[in-house]
Amino acid sequence: MTLHRRTLHRILLMLTLAVACGLTLVAFARLSATRPHLVYLTGWGLFGLMIYLTLYNLRKKFSFIPVISSRLWLQAHLYIGLFTGLVFLLHLRWHRPQGGFETTLALLFAGVTLSGIFGWWLSRTVPKRLTTAGGEVPFERIPVIRRDLRLQAEKLVLGGVAGAQAATLAGFYEARLADFFSHPANFSSHLVGSHRPLNQLLGQIAEVDRFMNAAEKKTAAALGELVRQKDMLDFHRAAQIVMKGWLFVHIPLTYGLLVFSVAHVVIVYAFSGGAR
Image 1 (spheres, rainbow, N blue to C red):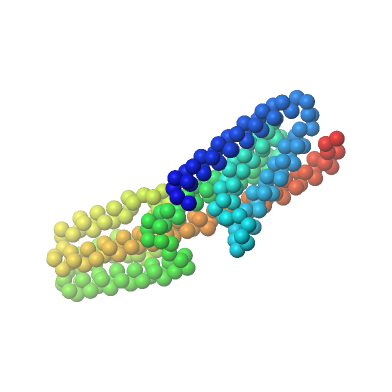
Image 2: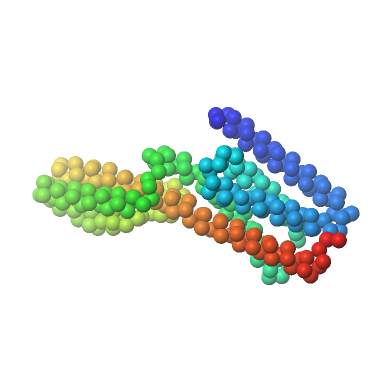
């Protein structure tokens, strides 16, 4: 699908969502005065929408089944999720939930919604940044690659000391770069796309460069390239941790919401007799 068609498709989905929300608000306003048990209808509608949204996780596990493409299902998941938020507010009749159980249920719903929006933002930004950074590095290989970069840097510095007969670069490496190459660094900066820590390190290398002889300067230039590679590797690690960690928040909240919703239905029908 071309970029123009994707944009047009997105606009149509947003218009469809706006129309659906408008019609739902009008229907609720007209029926709320004449249908005293409308809360049961919105409740069951809300429960059905949540079941549908939960099915997206099963669709990802059975991606080999040619029913609906994952991309289309994701788009439907997003827009129907936003519509579900409106139905939830209508079910509450725009009132704040009362009691500990209802408050917990509302907080779970808010957590699922907000984490879902955050996950959508991640899916729109992180893959593009990973592609720009040269493609995704397998997460399991990141420690191995980090170790190789550290060994290359140490070999480079030690070789430079012997070749240049000077220890300026070696002292700088021990003070500023040894820990950088040994451990993951700048997690929060990579999450927000900041290159400030990298630029600071490269700037410090440039400052020390004026105190080096010609042989050390050549080694420092090669070391700067390894610093860039290590920084890129840390970005891959941070991005993949967030992508994987998001699932461990959104999915448990989703199933927790379903469990509390079922309990809510049982309690309502047990103590109120249900909709007559």
